Every structure is written in structure tokens, then in C-alpha cells.
Length: 394
Image 1 (spheres, rainbow, N blue to C red):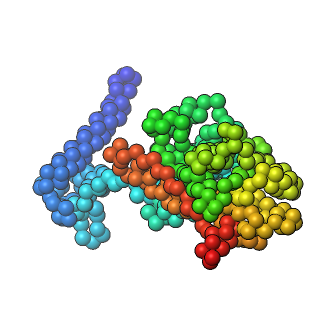
Image 2: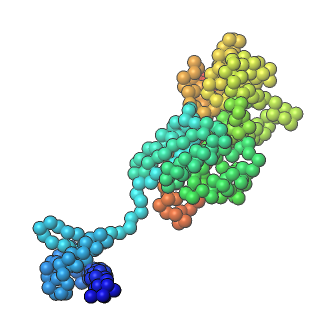
Image 3: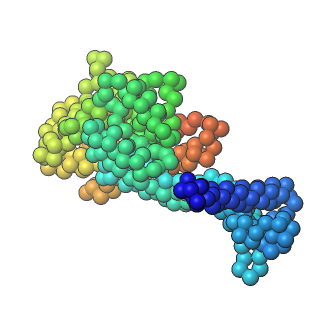
């Protein structure tokens, strides 16, 4: 036999095998598609037992191998379940469900003093709703803030609760626009664009620190004080970017103006020292400034500074609250002072709960959810340092 004819005969079985394989693939796929259409059309209801492989093989004339492959395809697609010793049954339809366990990213400047109660509120609310939390901090370092947000996004969070840097920036509105453009929903916590008024489209939950300071001055005024001072502090690096301090100063100034307590058109009893200065025991100097102003009462930001001021007053023979009434701002450790401090108390735990609730609503309701802009006014917790209890006992 010529060599070329031999080669042709040898090649023929391989070509035939390829065609047979293609036909078998087409047959099993056709059977799978026919069965799938019957299931979706209701020919076999959910839970109904399907014909056996042997029955289908006899009815269709297909090999058992082809029928078995068709069943395996339906099982892979979730349309059929096999029960050992019982047969093959129509499976319940697999409905696409929304993810019920959200992962929420939380960005805080730190986890000291003010924020542990906030974080507790967030965590408790998320846990009660079956969601979890991923935390990151940037320690008031703006250069680390974006890296912390990227870390949360890379962790696959579904939404973000952010306490970002907004004050002290050249263009805080642009910064907010960047945050709102992130690929997941964002709720700002203790941050908003107050200057924009109705132009602020951020979703946020904030303390009304201006209102808290305003109420503190009004409280002292009701107790008979007409010369009310303000003492503040801030971290040196964050002095220009401390939104709480700025709000407290604004609230104090608004109350002084509303009560007509200005001297020569100026607020003359507001004094500030940086936190390192307070730590260097400059409370004596701050007390001298306050006493020199003639003030009989003061709002002090925050609790530690107010406690230090108490000590400075005591060393000078000035009694609190008889000679000098004090209200601290923050209520973190106000009750631990030698003379327990009356304090403006932001609703920290409630802030966390509400921020988590707003974000979960946004995630579950989407655009149908109204825009939440929540502002909680702090309350005043009356203790011994303001003299209110003495007045009640008269």
C-alpha cells in the first residue's frame, strides 16, 4: 500500500473520534437544556423526583454516560439535587439575597478619652444588627489619613464611618467631595461643613458643641454670674484643627453676646493654653489670668484642665464653687476631680449608635433612604463645682 494511503487510513480514526466527542458533548448539553426548560416551566415542581438515568436513557435513546453528564450539569447549576439511594429531585430555586453581614470601616483620630464611648456605641449597634467593624486610626496626622482609608477599603468594607480632618485645611469642601466620592457610602462623625448651611450634602452625625458651650454659659448666668471666663486647650500640632475647641469658643462667644456680657465690644475673658503648657503645670498662670479678669465663673475645656484649675484655686485660698464656679467640657473624668465637676456631656455612646444606624440604613435602603444630618445637643450634668446644689439648698 502506498505510504500516503497508509497515512490517510491511520488519520481517519482520530478524525472520527473527534467528531464523535463533539456529538456526545452536543447531546448531553441538549438533554440538559431540555430538562432545565422543563424545570423552569414547572413541568417538574420543586421537590419532584425526576426520571431515573435508566428511564431517560431508554426514552431518549442516549447512552447512560450522556444522561449522567446532563444530570451533573443540572446539579452544578443548582437546579437538581441528588439524594443517595433515592434519586434526583428538582431543587428549590436559589434566590439572590442581599448580603446580611456588612463590614463597616471606622476611621478615628485616636482611641483615647473621647472616642472609646463612641466606638462602643458603633460596635454594639453593628453587632446587634449582624454587622462587624474594621477599625483604623490616624493619630491626628493628616498625612496618614488617606492611607488609613485605603486600608479600610482594601479590607473590603461595605461602608465607612469617618472622623476626618476638615478644619485647618485650605479647602475643606474639596476634601469632603473626595470623601463623598469614595466607592462605598460614607457617614461623617463629629464632622460637617457648617459654613455651607443647606449647601452641605454630607451625611453626618455630630454633637452640637456650640450649643453645649452656649448652654453652659447660660447655666452659670442663671446661677447669678455676670463675669464668666473661658479656658481652653489643644494639642500643639492640632491647635488649628480642633473642631470641638473652635465650636466651644463660638458657643461661648454667642452666649456672651446674647447676654450682653461684653466689655467695650470685646470678649475679654477667653484664655487658651496648649496642652503641653497645661501639662507643664501652667494652671497657676491660667488661674491668674482668670482671676485678673474678675471672673467669678468659668467654662473650662476639658475635664483635666478644670481639675488642675481647681487645685490652683485651692492653693490661692479660693473656694470652688463658693468663690469660683466651674463647668468643664467633655465629662470624661469630671466626676473624679477633688470637687466633682459639673460638666457639659456630649452623648458619645449615642453618637456612635446613631452613626452606625444611619450607615446601615443607607446600605439597606440605598437611594430610597433620606439624607440624615443629625446633631445632638450635649446635656449638662450638675455636680458640685458650679454651686447649683448650694443654691437649691438655700
